[in-house]
Image 1 (cartoon, helix red, strand yellow):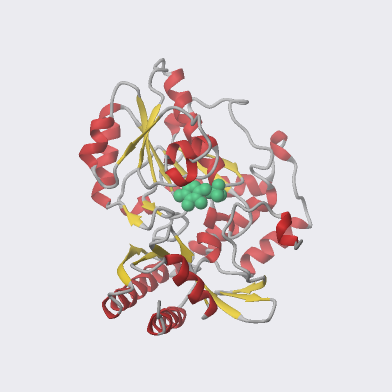
Image 2 (cartoon, rainbow, N blue to C red):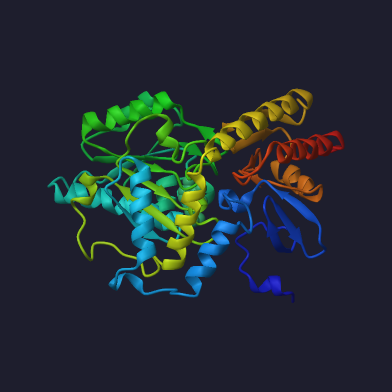
Length: 393
Ligand SMILES: *Cc1c(COP(=O)(O)O)cnc(C)c1O
């Protein structure tokens, strides 16, 4: 029996044993380097071992680890104030430790508002097919995807699923029971599908027309990944609720649910909570990450690198039409749709020194740290090119 047998087998885990990370690279126990274009599934926004997050975590670790939410703590107040201001729409933020928890909070808040407004029959939330919102019962019910819900019935009632990108079909689902609309501005696990700016604006108008709350799950696409701090900022709309997690902690567990003044109005002590939410170490790291992303040139680099990378990927799609079907995405959230098995491609590229993340068996996601340069992109394109040149299955 190996130590691996002691881990419940819910993951498709490769044999590579990672021991160290530095910048855009991971290193295994043999010293082999991998260009990390998975970034822990869009988590290591600043790469590995970033001096700003190192300093924030180590500094806070020597002061205070945890005091729960019975008292004030300065890192919590600092990050809350900062992220609320940066959001441009929020009145307040609730912190937790993961993306699923942030979505749970948002879903609960939507139901609560409708109840306290005197319309408890409005509890249903429209979500988008192919969406992913996390692994709790509410989050898998929201997603409705078979691979996530199989075996877990009965699901939580109250979610209606609209086809991706079809505004009329979504509008047709709105009825007297509808409370809100929940979606990822860019679907991640579903295969990197970008909702257009026009679609997001149309949803905002629809929500206004029917008094619905618009909840954007930016757990994967937020925190600078698509070229703006939050993806919705490109469209100019103001959502009612936004959830973030992954990139915010750069690897330290943290999640956040941002809400506007209308939502905040209905929240009172005891209506929701989290033991670890607002943990000073998570807050110190989150603030350090946010400040890095806000530095001059950071988001411009994401946009520039994203464009360069997408052009390079599109050239590879042309060069290998028998292996690749399409390249798409926004900023540094890119997907390569394959004819061959995405898992096989990901595994073979890893052997050749490039980490990526599959999204089902037909899309390889490329989610590099946001601090990469043109040199890293050239290196990644070379590995993909070489891998497909030698593909013989
Ligand atoms: C990863 C992810 C989640 C879930 O986050 P966890 O931290 O794993 O709970 C939710 N929504 C989206 C869009 C995600 O990509």
